[in-house]
Length: 195
Image 1: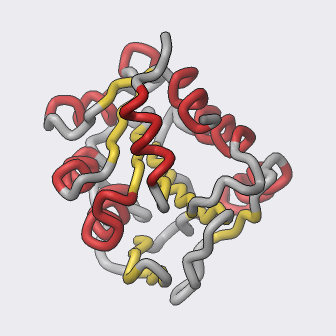
Image 2 (image 1 turned 120 degrees about the vertical axis):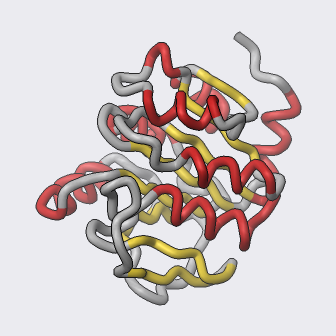
Image 3 (image 1 turned 30 degrees about the vertical axis):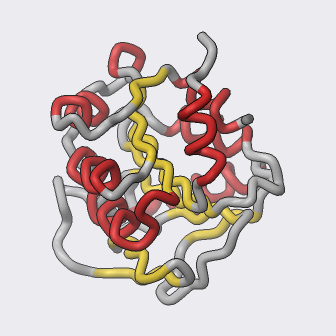
């Protein structure tokens, strides 16, 4: 299926790409990381639910297969283009400005820390229409409310097609909230990232 030229134009105008997911999302986010060229000219933030002791393996695997610089977010890190950041476990990743991250230790959201909702809502306040966000597979509703905030701020919002998601609840929750402007297959999402 050919992608709508409107979605391509909005993707290309984005400064920040947010990828959120939980159970069943790993391989899709991994494939996205492998797709990005070194000169994507965007910042990428990955917020994926994971246990603390799985952190280093995800980071190592993603970094070994990425043409972009990849690192875990630290408190007060600068936000740089052509860099992939991964939200660390046991903290919420905040976007404090267009140039700075922050980390927060407040309560888990949907039993999750990092919370996709928290990062997406911060991005909506700061980046507004200069953001693209994709919500992948997951077994709870985290990310749906955040995706709605992004849509309301003018961001491009995409949900993985729930019929192909290993755990459809997360993208389906976003669709039920009318937070996803586009419902795409993983192949279409990866094709978009190549444009």
